[in-house]
Image 1 (cartoon, protein in one colour):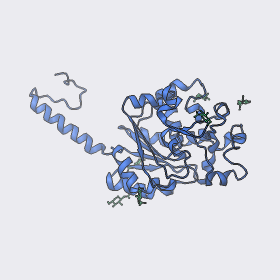
Image 2: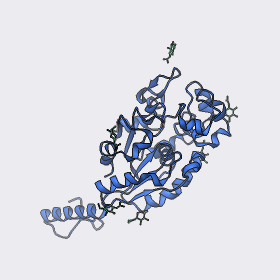
Image 3: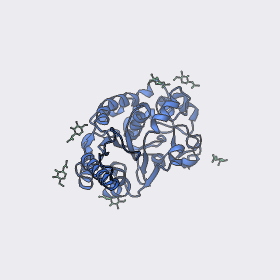
Amino acid sequence: MTMKGPSSPVSCRSNNGAKRLLWSLIGACLVVAVIGYKPVVIVHGLFDSSWEFGELLRFINESHPGTNVSVIDLFDRSASLMPLWKQVEGFKEAIYPIMQNAADGVHFICYSQGGLICRGILSTLPDHNVHSFISLSSPQAGQYGDTDYLKYIFPEFMKSNLFHFCYTAVGQRISICNYWKDPHHTDMYINGSDYLALLNSERQNPNSTVWKKNFLRIKKLVLIGGPDDGVITPWQSSQFGFYDKNETVVEMKEQDLYLRDLFGLKTLDARGDMFLCSVAGVEHVKWHSNDTVFNSCIVKWLV
Ligand SMILES: *[C@@H]1O[C@H](CO)[C@@H](O)[C@H](O)[C@H]1NC(C)=O
Ligand SMILES: *[C@@H]1O[C@H](CO)[C@@H](O)[C@H](O)[C@H]1NC(C)=O
Ligand SMILES: *[C@@H]1O[C@H](CO)[C@@H](O)[C@H](O)[C@H]1NC(C)=O
Ligand SMILES: *[C@@H]1O[C@H](CO)[C@@H](O)[C@H](O)[C@H]1NC(C)=O
Ligand SMILES: *[C@@H]1O[C@H](CO)[C@@H](O)[C@H](O)[C@H]1NC(C)=O
Ligand SMILES: *[C@@H]1O[C@H](CO)[C@@H](O)[C@H](O)[C@H]1NC(C)=O
């Protein structure tokens, strides 16, 4: 028997194969009962805070009682405008101990801008143990739209001229500029974006290889979004689709970053570990409080 050995947790002295099998099964059952559901870490988005996730906590508690859920309370509200690398460092520090406490790994649910912060963590943390990375309406391929948020943050700009500001050193000190992607000024984006263009390896950088390797430690990538979001523009950015220079949306599988597998998307897809979930009729601020979204796109990945 190859399983025999002093270090095997389910080995027993008996040479009786059936008895040994029984003990293995009991052992396995105990492990499941003791460990239960993996802890869940939630990272919020632009202008919100850990307080907005009451419904999501309730959905998780009802479907998977006993799950330890941590909503990270950092960079709330206007502090969410701070540069994303800075936020990555802060969230990482808060989340790392949770990972270390979780021998069996954790799940991430990362909402809106939080989805980009989570990618920053996953790419730069070589020993993370994230199983499901659930990206909930997050501008993964960038943002380009005249939304209310834009008018509020940059009243003097429109989408067509924000590149003048965003792709400067001063602009990059504001989170939204870190993932602003003007399809008419791609060269400036690639040179000027200190966050998304690096994370995507659209700008060559010495960390690309190791970041890709780190990112690929996740077991599942779940990309949730929908056409009635109203904030993420184009909405397909939540699933790595984006505008070409005519502002026609090109889906993920035709994007250069997928085709060249710049940071691991194509590998994840080939592994069978990438899942897209689109739901119509959900506004941006409703993604985490809508039970249809939870039941059809989220719950099955929280095991
Ligand atoms: C989880 O649900 C149980 C009953 O279903 C309730 O007693 C408990 O307070 C809930 N916990 C949280 C954190 O919501
Ligand atoms: C939940 O997880 C946190 C972070 O790992 C830990 O400090 C806390 O004790 C856990 N709570 C329970 C009830 O297990
Ligand atoms: C590229 O970005 C750097 C640093 O922000 C800037 O100094 C330089 O002028 C930019 N180059 C071009 C061609 O835009
Ligand atoms: C690569 O990573 C190191 C350590 O995390 C960091 O100091 C450096 O700035 C990164 N390089 C780039 C180009 O981002
Ligand atoms: C963009 O539109 C122009 C003019 O309609 C067209 O000639 C060109 O092929 C389009 N480019 C792309 C990438 O679709
Ligand atoms: C959740 O979204 C679905 C799909 O658009 C919609 O039919 C439903 O009314 C929404 N539920 C709530 C509670 O808003």
